Length: 349
Image (cartoon, rainbow, N blue to C red; front, side, top):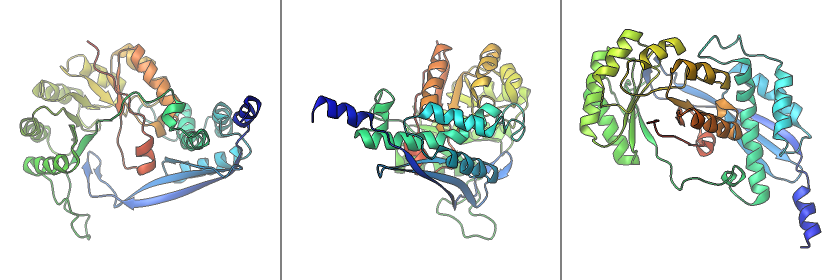
């Protein structure tokens, strides 16, 4: 191939010809949290983009009724664009939504107009990067500057749970409603999957019982970091008490109490870092969080923060202010799991 032909091939546009959005319902076990129990089914949506070159790409996102309506509207507006025109796609998404979303998801801790745009745009960006990688014959990580590690550590995620949803047969994991059940659940997960850290979903039982469980996990699995997440179920005084009781036991405490002000009050007295995926969920939350010293670790989702490029931007901002960065986990499918850009920074010294 001549140099001129190579340049022409590289410059050839790859146009979007069709966008499909497919909601998916999949079984969710009866996991308990501060607001109750998971529904029997979780919902996600798969976005697929087809092109005039015969290449297809996929992304994954949420599947609430309102979000699906936004996805369909934006998907139709992207037909005809080049899959590399990501900035134009983001701008078109913002223009189409027109500030929608700020009121729909509540105040601090929920979505804003900006983050609603990012959540809608994210699966389209991932699908377009998927296509770009296929066209170039390289992994998507190469499009972002290249891989920075050969392996990614994962954490076991422990839940108090019933044996089964009411009226349903018990699932294979069985009941875990006390310390012994949680430790047994952890042992099974670690033996089966080799997780290198442990996270407990707290805010279900009285804090004293959950402190006992966390200490038991720390003793049973020495050397593995332990994290605790009560989904902002505790008051500031309770959060401070738990933090002091677990000094030297947990790596970080995730969302012990609601809001930036509450988190800042706990962070001022907690001996370990505080992490969040509840009170810092948009770029506009970062500055007030840093100013208050509210959060030391941001737990992100690329499908929440606007895709892979904006996750890389988030990583740079966190690095600038000495914040740790890791990934939030929720009920998602394999597309999001495969796309998750893990970039976790150490706690600042």
